[in-house]
Image (tube, rainbow, N blue to C red; front, side, top):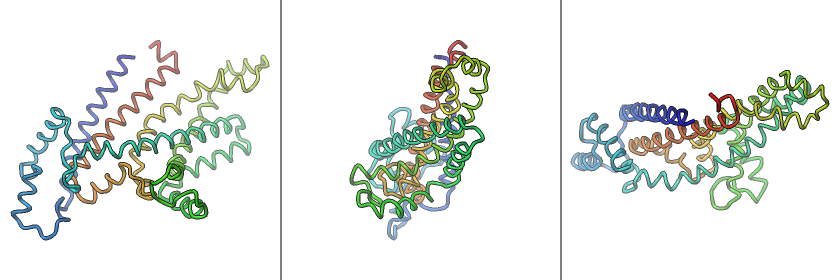
Length: 306
């Protein structure tokens, strides 16, 4: 297990380093000026702002200084769009909102997708199977930025309990979470169905059925754990993907999470904000994949022994 942890941590460090390096040079290649929103800046004022944020130095020195500040001080720098605010402060304030939304979406996705996949496998090639897969395919095909407005018009507007958009009361998390969970539930349903069909065709399952073991006991004690392994493999990246990919839903429902800052960073050429979010997302993805691998090792005795 220690070897697995070390390997995953090493891979995460390398991937994050390459990812941030690519984004560092890519965002600076985008046409535009990070201070273009300022009104009628004189050349000396423009030069002063560039000097203040270190943008007057050669790009190689900027790259070196960026990594030096992160490794020695843990400092992501100051946002260029939101003057006087550190990127680390922006992330620490908005990440809990995105995390809360992501956790609830993942729970809803698991609660919908896994039972749907089990049902489809138990009634293979019957109408229950076809109905479950139609629902799963719809969840994959209909993207979140289409589902969000549909839910706003068809659910939030007729009900006074739910706001169309905003983040002022606890119930405001429901619609964004439901919107995000559909894609996860769809993939989980398909993966669970495939895993369950594979396990149910094994000889030991046929033997258990021949001995008269009840179907519920076969599923819960013999088939469920190995059948869920493909789904568990998907859960790690899915959780990180929900958090990192929720910026569209957050903007639709005006959720004050990390998504709006990512959009602001791209549209305003805020180099430091974009790089800080990419670095944070990369580390988060690595942690999620590590937890997924550890869960697989815990579930599969063969992996533990190897």
